Length: 266
Image (cartoon, rainbow, N blue to C red; front, side):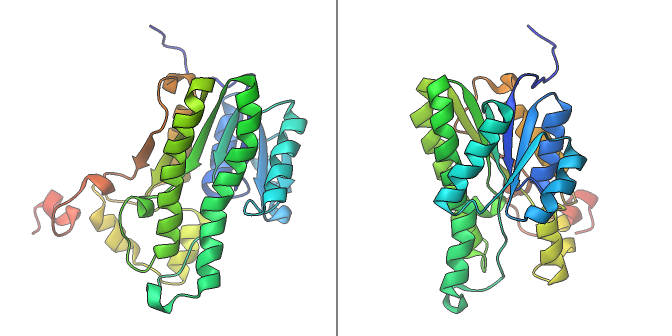
């Protein structure tokens, strides 16, 4: 038995999408818990400020969907930190609420490339390091949109569903070598991506709140805490799991709004 808190002292972590949203918050939490952290992001202008906000040790810029750049970012992080023990794949972009027959194929492909191919490429590069040292932990950020069908969001949904399958496949391939691979499936979270969707009126937040048993959108810190658990030794026998962090969204299967049922208004 142990009551020791989660401690990442001596661990070296790379967080993609680390200049904003869930990625930035996760990087900050890992640093607070003792890890040496490198953040990666496509937007190089935001990396410096994010470095200061998170307490990360290093940053590297690039497009996760580009094989050469993904390899370089992992190599940069490993060189700056003296190795690599933990990876969080949080880099991603959103899509538009467009039915399949009206979608721009190039836009569809870009969404899939960043969210799925990018996760694959970073895992592939980091995995080589972890397999050689026979230890490591990876958390991939999927989404509730990858768990079930969300009409009008086929690009993001396909990509995030692919992340779930990739996570399970890597867990099975790499588990015998001491490398754990897990994921989380966030619900709508108050990140810049979701705020952009709100500004463009892609969805109505009150509908999400009424559909969610907890009755609100999530915070990035709630996603970071779940990620930290899966990376930690507290989850040493957990691999191949994609954990919904969704306030009960995926559990709810009844008709109507949760809020009305909960408050007895309907």
